[in-house]
Image 1 (cartoon, one colour):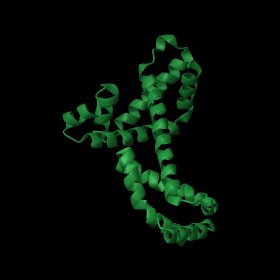
Image 2 (spheres, rainbow, N blue to C red):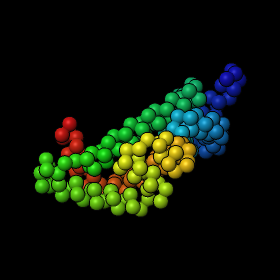
Image 3 (cartoon, rainbow, N blue to C red):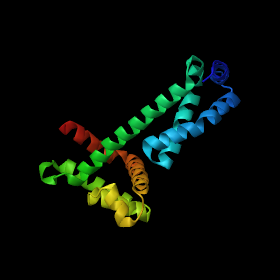
Length: 197
């Protein structure tokens, strides 16, 4: 970035930090396509890349007073977005593990209250999975219940591995959202899982 461009961007950042919506909109226009392309490479999911672009800029707007302190907005934005991706996959991995443990848990080793909570959550999970769009449901079941890889599922359904991944991301997002709506049971199981570790 040239010195003149950097100076111009700094002026926009200072304006945006005062709550100037047009200055912030200009920052968004300048970076949204580059950021989307970067996130698409990282996540291989159009939907997830779009969501993260929105989330990152929403967070920046909520904290717009700090924009004037940023020296290199591009580097800051891409680093922030990369951290967002890492946190997303870390959270998704943890929650996927918990869901997987619910399916594999052996009720004979659990106390009565835990068995009741486990059964309720498994029933709830089955209901959520049943309500997924047909292709999402099929892909989820092939992946999580039959243990097939994304490549195997892609060959079986004659779609690309990337499409399989997108459907899995969407299915897991729906499952997590629905489980959180019934958080009492889910949190109880999370507590049990944490306690056992």
